[in-house]
Image (cartoon, rainbow, N blue to C red; front, side):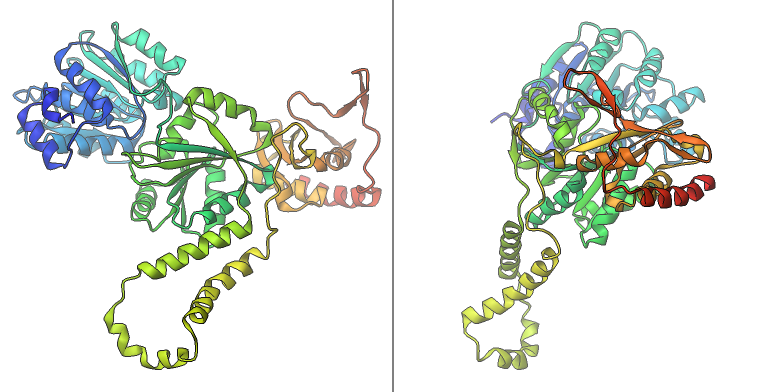
Length: 571
């Protein structure tokens, strides 16, 4: 077994590593540490989240810091304040036996005055987010003109978050002879470009397969109708009673909405997104680490830097816009040698992305069906029984059991178990009786039913008309006399907006908006994308849609138009 002592690490750092309980280095540490200690070279290291990258670059850098000088010699740039604080704490632990070595975190959301004072006292190593770093550089609170080491951690994430110009600007203030160490989970074109522009013939180290996901993670996808996403999420959570998961959404709005619905339905859930204050974020993360929150619903940006072990599941409520981000999401589970599961809730229109994902992560993503009620009840009852079995008995309860025992004297062991389990079964069964036995699913073959597919529309109403997504959704629900859940994925631009319905409602929706005029303004609704508001003839030519569905009567059209005019004028 490889030991840290064989990597060339100094005795003082080994002392700290041993005190932290680290026994043997991870693969990325074994490959990177000797190289960074022995060679004066730029380096690109590709390794997944949770593989020990901080020690891989931190130990070699700390060993080469000159503690007799208080000038800044090493800079670590990282995408988020959470990751900034985490790395700073880890480096401080590694340096605990090195007298006079100071590490200062630089990030937004905290007092810039306190950070400036800490830097002035002498900070050989800075761990910083791009925004606060540039702010302090502009104010001349920080001097990085003579640094020896620059680490770009989670480089792909920084570029995904739009920090390319910030990184370019920061690097322009650093000396040409510094060593640049770039660490990334994936190697998209933007990261390769950074390596070409700012690094001198970098050595590349890859742990596992480039861009591949951890082998400890099982990947699954569940194909459902768009309107069934939330019910699918609940079923997947209910099937795993001990679930400790992160649920990823694309937008802050969806993140908050899903978390609120889960809380209303009795789940221990919380939201993490960019609209929360730092104090709110800290409270949510504290509750999540303590497992008071079992389901954390988060955006990709907000979740970066989360350092929580033993996460059992990552659930992709929606796939990310950048497909490479999937690797970062799924890497939140299956860490430190443990196993985990990555679940994708997928609609038919997204099915083609599965093959792309499989190529990127070099792993199979298996198709699964949403569990039905019988499976959930069985799992939940077994969990309940196991919980009773493992409950520690406090002997003080004996003083209160005399009368209770008399109540149960007439029952056999089997009857007592039956009654005890019925308490939980009746509760669960009552809840699920309100739902159908199984969620309507879309078949993955070519003969799937069109009823379960989605249709996306464009409407010529936007923010310039005073609409946000809530107002527009309310307008559409009222005008079309539909249920709130029938209209979803409402996105409002300046001059137009988008919304979705199930495909079985497309004739109804298009007929409702045919030749519609509100206060002299023509309101048009068309298919978004390549489809248009017309049918195709057999020869490929188009013809205007003239046949309105019978379900949309003239009387209803007149009533809804009158009601919608009032709402339209209010905007």
